[in-house]
Length: 426
Image (cartoon, rainbow, N blue to C red; front, side, top):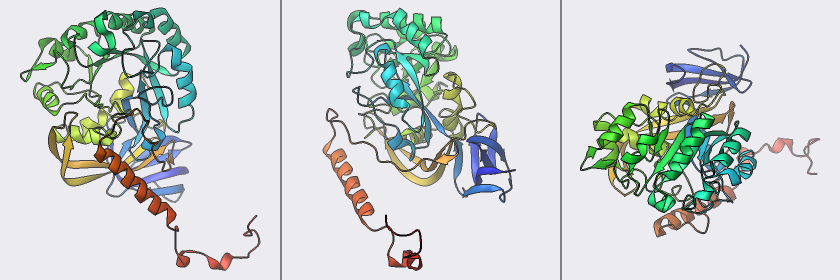
C-alpha cells in the first residue's frame, strides 16, 4: 500500500469518522487512505511518529472573520492555522452582497479552506457595527441572487441581532434573513448581544438547524436570569436550534455556559468568533476556547465533535470534511495534551482552572504540513492594553533573536562539499 504520509502511534479521536484509539493514519493523493492499527511503514514516503499525541481531523471553526484589508474585523488565517490545527474556517458574515467577490478573491489566496456565511446586510462588516440600521441594506432579492451565484462559497446566512446593529428595526433584519434562508435552503447564523431585541423573542423565528451564536454570552437580554434559563431558550434547544459558543471579544461567560450545561443545554458547536479584536485575547485561538469548555466539564470527545464533524454536518460541508474517513481530505491536527493547573478567563475576566490543555503540535492540509507563518500586526484601529502591546513586543524581540542567530554553527555544516561542481555561487 503506497502512501504519501503515514502518521503512526498516535491516539486517534475522530467522532465523525468513527475512529478512536491507538491507530495509524495513511494519506495518499491528499486524501485519507486508511485508519487502522499497524499500517505498513516500508511503503510510506514520509512517516510521522505521533507517539504521545492526539490525532484529530483538521478543526473546523464555525465562526471567524477572515476578510482583512476591507473590513473592521478581518484577519488572515494563514498566520494562525499552522499553530492551531484549524484547517476549515467559516467566515461569519464579514461580507454581504457588495463584498462577496472581493472575499472570494481574498480567500482564494489562503492555504486553508474557507467557506462563508453571507451577511443579510449588503454592506457586510466594513464598519464595527450598524450594518442593519438602514433596512435598504437588507435587500432580500439581492441576497438571494448572491447566494445563487456563489453556492460553492456560501453555506449560510448571517444576521446580527443586537441594539447597536438593528436600532429601531426590531426583528425585521432577522425576518429578511429568514426569507433568504428559506428560499435558498440554508441555515441562519444569528448573532445575539446587547438587547433589545430580547433573545427569547428572536428564537421563535429560528428553525431546526439554524444557529444561535454567542449562546453563552453574559450580556444578552433574555437568555439567563438569576441562573434560570428562559423557557423559550430551552424549547429552542429541544427542537433542534443549534447553540454555538462564538466566544469573541464579549460573547462568552463561564457562569452562563455552566448554567446551560447544568440544565442539559450542551453547545452543539464550539467556535471562536476570531477577529481583529479577539485575536489578542480573550480568545487567542480555537484550542484555547476548547480548553475552556473542557474546564467547565465537557468531555474531550464532545469538544472534538463540536469542532470537527458537527460544524461540518450542520453547515453542509462536503467530502468528509471534519473527519478522518477514507476519501476525506487529509486535513489532520496533532495535539499534545498537557496536564496541570491552567488558569483561563471568559470575556469578562472571570476565571476557571482547567486540568488539561490542548497544544497544537502539527497541522496538515491535504497531507502536507502547514509551514510556520507569523500573524499580521494589529490594525491601527484596534485598541490593545499595555500588557498586550508589551507581549507583542516581547514576541517580536524573541523572534528576531531566533532568526538573526545563524541556524547552525560550523560543526553543523558540510565543509567537504565546498567547491564541488554545482555548489558554486551563481
